[in-house]
Length: 145
Length: 393
Image (tube, rainbow over the protein chains, first blue to last red):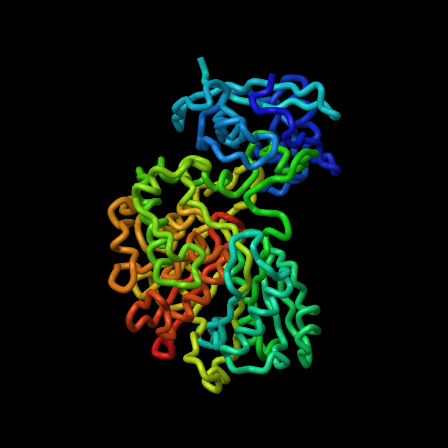
């Protein structure tokens, strides 16, 4: 059961494989981001080298799926054919304090009309799409219990 | 070392527009719109179209300068310049790029143009069905975030939270554009005034943006003709001199997955100081301002980043009466702008700034000498410029 209806674009790994470890990780229920082996800077989204020290030695590190809502929006207007008639849904940009405060986008699970608070703690939920042509897993978020 | 500056070296001597249409309603193909706008600007300037030798545009305009030059029978082609980046971020940069070419002897008569028939191509406000996505969009689109209204809602939501800004500040910005459009027969929203009640009752697009916080989608074209300051007085119109242009964005603005350090911004952090330095002016010197409204939140952050208002003063300052010509403290978007005149990717704002300096605007600020134009905010790169009358040189 996915948060949004079927028919939205399916994510695939980039042809140059830059983000392959991320997508492979989510299939295994692991949240991975980049960390520089030379200077320990966290980096997200992925890039080939470290923006802080230009080292090419970027590691993929598993991080705990815990964060805080940094900003959000509730979308009402259906901008994609698959969303017509669906109603509102919430997108949250989540900051990960355990990974250098990098940010990740996702949906906030639960009532789409719930009030949303910036700063609220959230936990990652892995949402598999096993029936896609190339199966993938999205990282979603729910309010921390 | 000699000062490096464009200040006062180039002027706008011609402006032209097509009729502005709602999206999909242009009877002409996009290329014809481009030609008509350029010819109108030539007519306004009093130049022969054959004498245009240089072209500058932005946002991947589909109308190739080589084809335009051939179609118009131009004697020769010199500059063919395209500013990188999407949205209307490059509107002022295109003027700056053309002006830089003129000032450095690489161009003589340049046209800055933009033609847009969204109905004939992909609309900005709708995504295409199905398929797969890779790269940055793979981290965004599967969550239902596709279009600028949604992406930029995330920015202003955080900014409003950080600074305690209320919805009424956004509403005042929308109403200023609609108010000025009621005096402008060219405006698509001419005869369709906006009330506070109608704004409040309008549907959400992506919170905190109501329908009326969002620009239109339109068909049309616009063009400006630039020449050197030395030649500017040979033409019939009062020249509008380029006092400063700045383009760019802040540190790691394009970091993927919304990881720009200053994500909750309009991207003008380091850009606006370059503008004021070259202009040798400050925000208090600006008589009339056009500030690109893709969304009202972008205008608000553009104003704060340029120093027109402090973030914590937005609720107090952003009231309709302060934003109206002729007597407001900061007359804003005096033709109706992207919200209510036409979403001509902001080039209509540049043209309005020229009109204000000529004294021919439909909502004229009496005696305007310094006109600011802030191009599309919240993208990268962005750009911004100051035009001035002869007295400001």
